[in-house]
Structures are given as structure tokens and as C-alpha cells.
Amino acid sequence: MYILDTCAIIGISWTKLERAVQKGVDFAVCPTTCFELASHLIRSEEKDYARARTNFLKCRMPHLLEDSAVRWADRASATQGINPGRRDERDLLLQMLDIVSEAQSLDDLHARCLRYPDGFMLPLANHGERIDEILRGEEQWYKDRMKQLLRESEFFRLPNGSYGITRKILMGNLERAGGSESPDSGIGRRRAVNNAMAQAPYIGYMLHRLYDARNHGRNDIDRNDYEDALICLAIDLDRNDVLVTEEDGTIKALTHTAALLEREACVMSKDEFVQRECQ
Image (cartoon, rainbow, N blue to C red; front, side, top):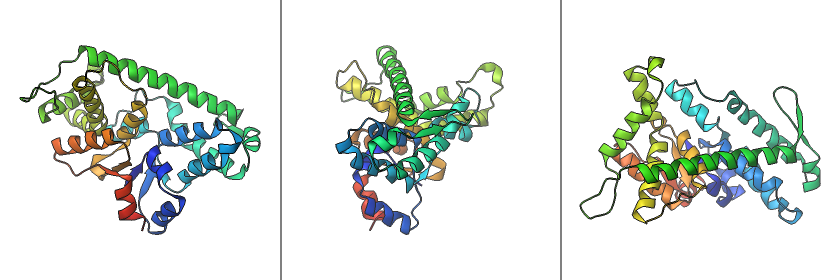
């Protein structure tokens, strides 16, 4: 399955995506991408509404995945600690897509309401503010955590003097991530391995961002990396999922991670996807 990120959805024309649908291509989009495009739409001005609306409605063509954390938890059999509200996000987005398909103007859109699972009705504009607040909070948590790791982690130096990730470094981080549940949880070896491999693209991506920052002398992490990290968490290596993106850093990180794990490539460029699947 292909997973298209925000840059890919925006960069691939409606006609090309329709062609992929007609060919029966198995491609999907994460809630994170839809939320970002919905945020652009709700905060747009009237002159930009048609373009933002088109980009958001492109998300109706791919399969809409469950939340990335939910997908990871289901693969790793680690459902404890997942906010139950995350399982509602897909249904809310499907509802938003239906609403936006009917709203021909920004004023019309702002007059619409979204129905929550408990029956509560909220104006779509207010839901957009809620999305922004949640995303900004999660981005800040990610940024703070990555900055802490950047300060406190020991980085492996290669013979050429730069810092680099080896298979041993990656596997060590995966083992720690796989066994991160409470010692009282009774996590077994098989479950620990499943947990670790379910996070491999996610852990690999974050490691590469940390090492890239260290090699370039930066003491900060771009908060926008959070959305890319979440999409990486959705990748299932056992299903041969492939992320489609235009982000060079993401392509390099996932290409190297797959090579270290001796797995097939789990990332490709937007242009390669279009050439392969949209002609």
C-alpha cells in the first residue's frame, strides 16, 4: 500500500489521482495529512477557498487510514495507553469530507456543524480551532522531547569524523522501544519484537533527524517534523507499505532505515509514484 503525505496530495493533480483509482492502485492517506489540509481550508480566505477545498477533497480518493498511533497499537498488540478519542478521528474526517463536498463557499462551510460520537454538535470552524490546538500541543511535546534527546544522547562517530547510524545503533533503539512497557505488564519476547518492528520507520526517522541536527551543529528540531514522524508510524513494513513524499530528509531517513533492516524500500518520491501508477 502507498501512503501519500501532504506534499504528495497537494502536488499530484486530481486527474492523476483519479487515474490511480481507475487502475485499482492501493493507496491511502493518514488522518494527520487530512487534518493539516482541513486546517488550511478552514483558515483560508475566500480567494483561496477553491484551491484549499480541492486539495482537501483529494483525500476522498485514497483510503483513509486509522490514526497512526492506533495502527501502531493494533500491529504491536499494545492498545493500553491509546487515547480512545483517536479511534474517532477517522469517522470525524469522513464526515468533514462529506460536508466540504457540499459547501461551495467559505461562508457556507463556516455555517456547517460537525456531529461528535456523543451527539454533540460543533461548528466546523470551532472544530478547526480544536484541531490546530491539539496539533500545536503535540508538535511542542515532540519538539521538546527531541531537543532533550539531542542534548542528552550519545552519538556514534564514524571513521570520517561525522556522526552516523549503524544497524547496531538502530536495533538497540528498537529493542528499547519494544520493551518500553511497564515491567509488570508481562510483555513477552515475541510481543516486544512485534512492538519494536511496528515502530521501526518511526524510530528510524527520528534517529535520522537527531543525527542530522548533530552533524549540522543545530541544537533545535523543526516542530513540523512531528507530522512526518506520525506518518512514518503508520508504515507497516510487513505489508510492504511505501510512503510517497517530496521531503528529501524523509526519503533519506526511510531509505537508510530499510537498508539497515535489510527490508525493501518503504519510501518513494511523488514523481516516481506518478510515473509508476498514474499514467
